[in-house]
Image 1 (cartoon, protein in one colour):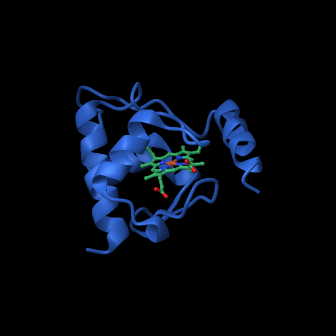
Image 2: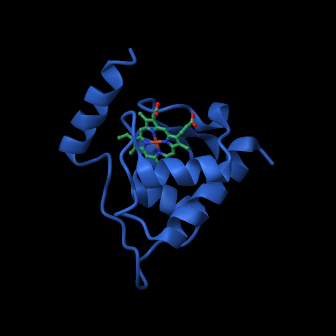
Length: 108
Ligand code: HEC
């Protein structure tokens, strides 16, 4: 199963639905964690109850309960089948998204 994950992720990216383009500036740029999660397509790969997401390519974030620092690091560098979002989201969007995911995933 582990070996399948990068293949599935690559297929999703080729299909163009895994990582949609997100506005990083201007009035159309999403600014809340929930909006950024939706706009960036995290839901196509991850389960996160607070976002109504049930993807199963990557880890279930409700179970992984990553800290904000872990989410931010993963978003910047990607790896293991997870695309990097450093060129797709602004640093402040990454920060907002990381804190939102960490807070809703931990249930705090
Ligand atoms: C194309 C599929 C895909 C997309 C889109 C995606 N991820 Fe991932 N993500 C993965 C995979 C696969 C892993 C596991 C990587 C590993 O094992 O190192 C992962 C790992 C993670 C982790 C680490 C989980 C842990 O157990 O520590 C976090 C946090 C995360 N993703 C958040 C996000 C967020 C937030 C988004 C939206 C900006 C996102 N991901 C978009 C596939 C994806």
